[in-house]
Length: 220
Image 1 (cartoon, rainbow, N blue to C red):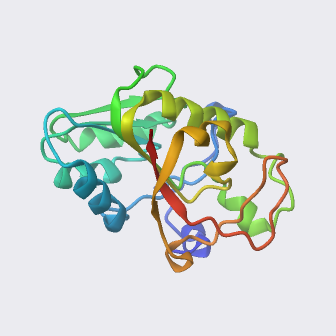
Image 2 (cartoon, rainbow, N blue to C red; image 1 turned 90 degrees about the vertical axis):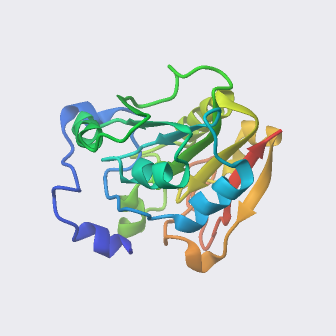
């Protein structure tokens, strides 16, 4: 799906920007989601980690729960949690009544325990589609590298050693963050698998032509 397609998505899925949505931790203005949107990614993680009642997975920015539902099918025994900033999204997610799944409203992982998760998925969340559509030269009018860095640092805190951090479609490169020194790349993809989102550097300036293909990172 292209950003043009997203712009045409029914407003039931593209939530309006109410006052509570102006959190500095809110990156993505669109809540688009779909069942089985990332089968290649979820299968990779399942094959790498395996399933079991001791496995804990987090979907951060889970929207209305379709991502978590897809994970439940691949990880029938694992404990799953979805967090989203929009309480309306979480209400829809809870209405799915997925077994063994907890949904919570939140704009960060600050309330999660240290070393709690085997994998954290943050997919098409730490980006703002309007930057690509508008051809922005700087991102700091709407988002900041410092916020991205703080958020992924807390994801790292919440991962077990050997845990997987899955970041697909972001406006920044994980390897530019301080916490990246404690991770190795576990999966890279080809440019044709990427959304056409633009990339910005730690100075919040556009990196013309940059394509970032590393998407899964394993904590040492």
